[in-house]
Image (cartoon, rainbow, N blue to C red):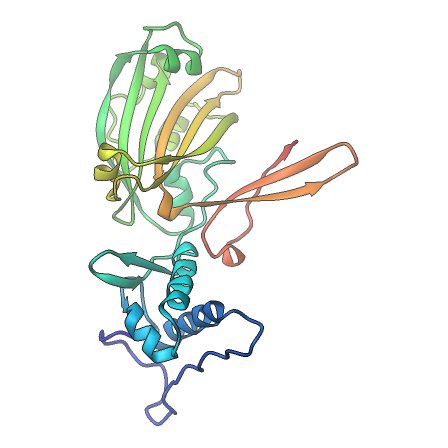
Length: 290
């Protein structure tokens, strides 16, 4: 599938790998069969993220199927995060999405990524004292136009743009960190050194389309899907200590709801933010009464 050189894990005298053809008499749809063939071939050849894959025309010839079947298979693989298609360049093995639990836990992105061995760095675009507008004032429980600290960061995970986050802190808390270097350290960990820890939070997630500024910062196309997280965290005295809005790349995020009925009158929902291959992700859930 790829002209790039890879270490071949198979013996030199092994039979050449010939993916099985498409069984037109099988109950399984042809596009689904083709999808499985492509996945098997990626695994067999040991292809890595960024490696190029055959185009539509070549797949049609190789498997003797119509372009409609090929496009259905590729659309499914793209949706599942196995491949990514770049207009004018081709089809590539995609970087796999990674599990995250930012919606239902009080950890930050730094802690979340560090727990799985990744690295986060931040480009701090703004870090100053401002007057709170009505939305910020209401979220932090302070009067409008009160001084608050704003910290705007473009977050990178393993050197890839990941999220654009704007955090607001009440002045008494924000003044502790307004002059700190936040490029390579966790804001939550820094606040913890001052005895500031969140014990409760309200966090929501919604979809949005990237505008020109967001697309430029996150390196996605204008109109591409973003995941918007909004959060208010409270300290042990039930005082708001942080409010943030974060725009995450939609091509790196997926949510699953796990539902259960615990009684005839009450149900619970467990929300999990996972990678695309959810069966491989360690379960991490939090239940909410419905």
